[in-house]
Length: 254
Image (cartoon, rainbow, N blue to C red):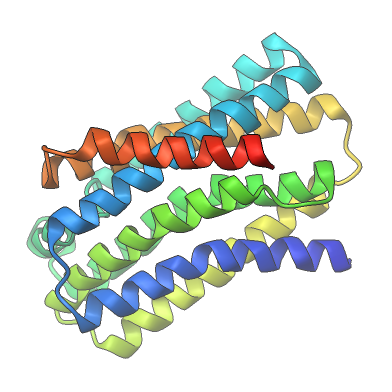
């Protein structure tokens, strides 16, 4: 049980960047290119980590076919859920400008905007939290490169969307309570990832790891890179390459 609580704790640590970003977003107006740079950096880190740790490890454990099947299933599940959220106004949930515009396009109220953004953040965070729990279930230690990449990618989401909700009229208190709740739910997801898969057959862990990896890649492709590029077309590729390089270096050194 102690290990499960530890997994949940790491999930909260990674998601706490959402809370930090939300606090920054409601207190200061951060230049959008800076938000885009952080987002692209985190996206590069996530791509590196899922390639060199998650997918590779799933292949070594369960073989090629289960890995590819799980990976594609995870990507498809994320894309379908993202399409449903897009119809509610959450396609550009990581951008403050988009969230501001969603006030009239999606639900016509700040409360509805906040709910859509919260569900979108949960959709983004569930695969990441599962991976953190899985890493403890597999090797007894959390993947530090993945933890750093997740934290970096969460920061701009909390920052940008909280700024949009503040613009839509939500109080600072309600915004912070919302993001703290999401961070706690992310911790529960990491804990469940550990409890459900600790002691499971290697093939099962491999498939679930691949499913989570597919969801993470779909999230990066659908939201992080397009929205970072839309905000700053000059340096998105460079920021992503730097994030990829850092995560790869941490993987090699670890």
